[in-house]
Length: 104
Image (cartoon, rainbow, N blue to C red; front, side):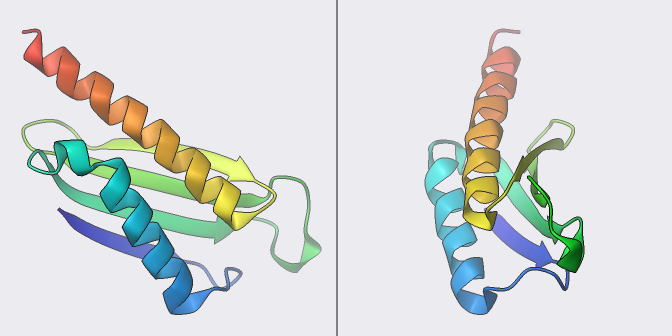
């Protein structure tokens, strides 16, 4: 499973944040690592220096072998909360997609 992390200029954290995201996604999707081929994580500060409630966004796109890509987004006031929320959503969504495929 390949994991790619992208962020806009408003996100700080560098290598530590990238490693956090990679470790979290690996652990979150480990159960399906043979079926998930690629995970792209996009981190963004939607309002930049203006700030605002829940203006940090984490979008996760998972590519599952034989299925269309699946994407989820989570907004929060803290980047780690946004990442954690998106990880929970992608885990549920991937589980559901794989179970649905198995039932056919």
